[in-house]
Image 1 (tube, helix red, strand yellow):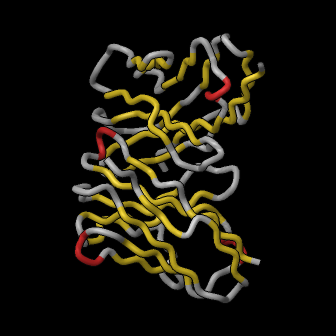
Image 2 (image 1 turned 90 degrees about the vertical axis):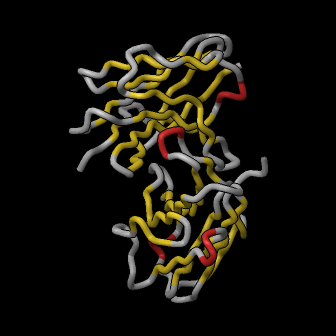
Length: 112
Length: 113
């Protein structure tokens, strides 16, 4: 099975600091898309950032950026200037061939 | 735009009972998904609709789960009879294009006792 692996079940960061969440994935396709979703206690999954595999430039969205290493099949999320509202579960996901697959998630705690 | 609406928000039932969940996607989104999220895990696709046709239901336990999307708009997911292991959050999502990502509802937390 083509899987998505998040090796960090839990992470913690001090407010205003930077944290990086790891994700690796498996695919035999050359055309695919990668996503990071945030799931706060409200349970609603919120799209944080997306990356097209054919683009070499790393995606950025305000304080959120990714480090996309296509050869290594790695897709990490960097959160800069962490805020209390960033505390949530974060899910990495890979889409190709009509199939969106999610990792098991990383729980991020932000300490004031 | 209005988001993906789901109801109920919580449901507690006894094993062997039946339950139904409802989802209303974002207007104009042709594709609708039902996901099951067991505590501590990522969401797992149960069924995908394109308009009112099923695209993928390979992971739907068809002996007890059923879903429909009449008229290609809102959808219902039913479990009959429920088992203890069905306790999970059931998420509905819709998309205009899968490549830009999905919009999720707030989910229904099902507890089977």
